[in-house]
Image 1 (tube, rainbow, N blue to C red):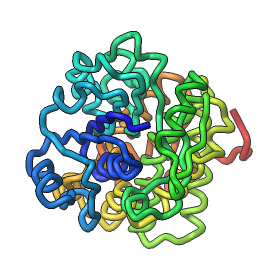
Image 2 (cartoon, rainbow, N blue to C red):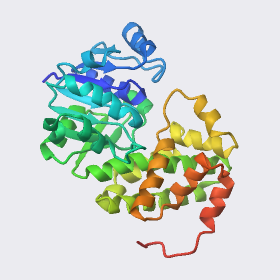
Image 3 (cartoon, helix red, strand yellow):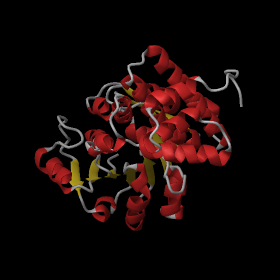
Image 4 (cartoon, rainbow, N blue to C red):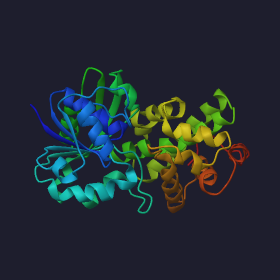
Length: 336
């Protein structure tokens, strides 16, 4: 059955998901804040800013009018940067009369409220949609999905029917979708792995090797799980696609924006200079603020998060951060 779908956010991931759905035969409208992106998609069938070189399906139409994009849509996919989701989806909320499914594909934690995207959307969307929310996450570089390279992800919802509907909507022969009930774990995994990718990038920029990267990934996963358990997540989620899978991808893949930022910092560049050259958003930068604040609020240790934060915002050098991590008090590997 053909759906009328609105995708809110025309970065690389939003464009990729919109194109995937259009190629499945759906009527897709893609909202972009940037008019040059809208024009490029409609006139040249390419998002030359965020997804250059990928030909877009003719059933995909771009717009810079948010209300017109979501009006009449039965499915709305939210893919704005996490710090803008509240404002963007709050503005869209009044035009969602026909929406029966809302899929969030943003990965982050709102800095000022320390809320996940689940909590943000529950704040701003009509109450009738709260049971129709689901969250798409997992190891999925947009460039590879757009070229139909085999990818597996997770969609989480508190409603089994909602999760299955989203699964069916996105499933293709190259994009395999698993379902989960653990919204909290899937959301935290997708957000926190970006902070760990910054750390892995810094280590690579310092010239450190595979041993260091393996240690960061493993201990990073321990920190992610520790926070997740305190906030009510299922610890097994962090061993899955939205946890370990996405963590490995972003800590090792050269297409990772967060790893790229970390690498530049490890080579001695300033955060201001690195971010000033980027049009895309490296979610891990702001998420490091939120993760550090959550750890302090909950009274748990997240030493990698703390060191990444100190490098980003307190002037600590990456080499000092590594030394601090290595010289922490020795303890058992498994502890609470």
